[in-house]
Image (cartoon, rainbow, N blue to C red; front, side, top):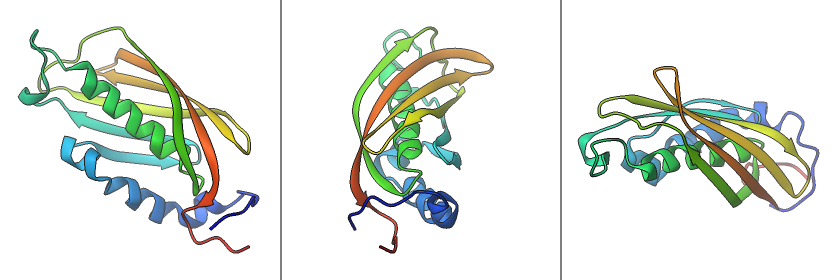
Length: 149
């Protein structure tokens, strides 16, 4: 469905459907990522670091942290019901994740307009900041929720 609709109330009206869409995202499920919160322009998810997710130094592979951050970015930028895709991301790593740890990523929308939106993502474990991501989304004309024109 294509349009330029006011987005007020779309998140609240379709929050359950949007949450279920991301809760069932195939790659995230394969990795064991769990979506725990979805707000308007925000998302939180967790993953437990398993042995097969470790790098050769015995710490969480950077790709695991990136996948978790990218997942909450996708959930947050699509939380308005408007189809959004990533344009660019920058990931900075500060500390290593440990085997068996629960790693949490939190995405927060900083600004959006009709075509683009900017997000900050924090990746943490046991109160320690492991990484941060800055992300830019492109917002298409399509809505993936059944909006009325």
